[in-house]
Image 1 (tube, helix red, strand yellow):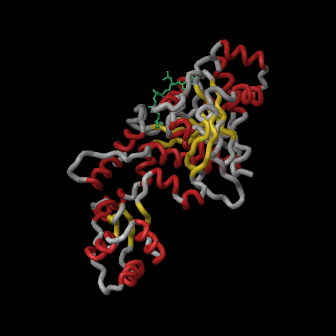
Image 2 (tube, protein in one colour):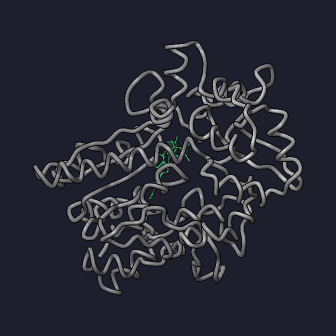
Image 3 (cartoon, rainbow, N blue to C red):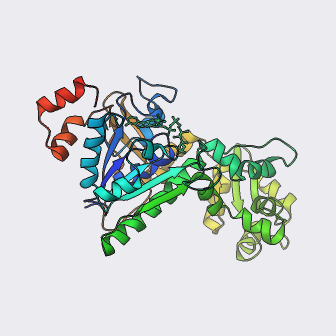
Amino acid sequence: MKALEGIKVLDLTHAHAGPISTMFMGAMGAEVIKIEPPWGELNRIFPPLVKGVSPYFAFLGRCKKGVTLDLKHPRGKEMFKEMVRKADVVMENFSPGTLDRLGLGWETLMEINPGIILASISGFGQTGPWRDRRSFDSVAQAASGYMWLMKDDIDPNGPPHKAADAIADTIPGLIALIGILAALNHKHLTGKGQRIDVSQMDAMIAVMQSFSFWNLAKTTFGRVYDNRVDPAFGLHRAKNGYVMFMAPEGRLSDWFRELLGIEELERKIVEEWVSERTVEDVVETLAETGIPVAPVMDLGEVMRNEHALHREMFVRVDHPTIGETTLPGFPIKFSETVGDITTPAPLLGQHNAEVYRELLDLTEEELEELRREGVI
Ligand SMILES: CC(C)(COP(=O)(O)OP(=O)(O)OC[C@H]1O[C@@H](n2cnc3c(N)ncnc32)[C@H](O)[C@@H]1OP(=O)(O)O)[C@@H](O)C(=O)NCCC(=O)NCCS
């Protein structure tokens, strides 16, 4: 059994921030119906295309059924409304106002189904002076202070820096997912749906501990962290690569001292000790001593790592076009329910017949007519 079994999600999301939410819902058992315009969503063409498939879409499109539907076509709107009647959640991350322009805004959806949960992610929210602005990850990294923080950490006198992966999409996506799960519980208790409004900028601000360091002590988390005087703290260079370990003052530094057989830990002694050994040697020894430590691994090394493999954090996904590929696994290990993230991203409109037959009772002739008219 899966934890979200029985939950039906109409997924209008595109790009990254919305699709990561619905992917995890699908992995936990929700029936996620990804509704794309007949020409496909943004991420289908994010380069480089491998056999015509974007690595981005292959990653985020998993655990969803794929249908096409032109929401600007009157028949498409009617079909969508009919599906809203039977759904628990509608999720979207268009620029604010888009759903209203389509005639499918919150009031309309709620009238059709008072139990519906409408979750929206946007750059800056559904209210406020910046409401109408479009946004991508980097824009939200800039607007939340995150790019300034990266620069402050790397080189306070240098240019701003962006985090390498799209964290200002992922974090809002996960925050929205928390909201959806809470709203499902509220619906379970009261029968009522609700509107969820998550902005990329808000979500980033909400998780950044540096705002607290800044307000209370005019510093940042990174500055405190980098200026730690503990001799056995941070990145160290071994014979064949880098090792990260942390033994702050307390029992962890006591253990380090005992290991080296010295009274006083000094940075120079620690650096020398590391530089004379291999990464593997340092990691084994420190881990055994109880000190938090890891080798600095590249992506290939992580994918081959025995521990990540034991935790099933890389899974084989059999995609109809690209064949077998390896993708990140599902990170929540439930004791009672299954999390499975191996269903491949759908081809464009792959599940049209299955979904529309089941949800809308459409016949093959009706489907053919909808195809001819470009509605699906
Ligand atoms: C990502 C973003 C910048 C893309 O901008 P965009 O491509 O101009 O997309 P918008 O959301 O503004 O508009 C989508 C358009 O596609 C149309 N569309 C979407 N699904 C459709 C469907 N199934 N059928 C017909 N039309 C559809 C919408 O109606 C809208 O058209 P309109 O502007 O003529 O009304 C923008 O969607 C955005 O700011 N989103 C919120 C923040 C976010 O999540 N960013 C992405 C993070 S990865």
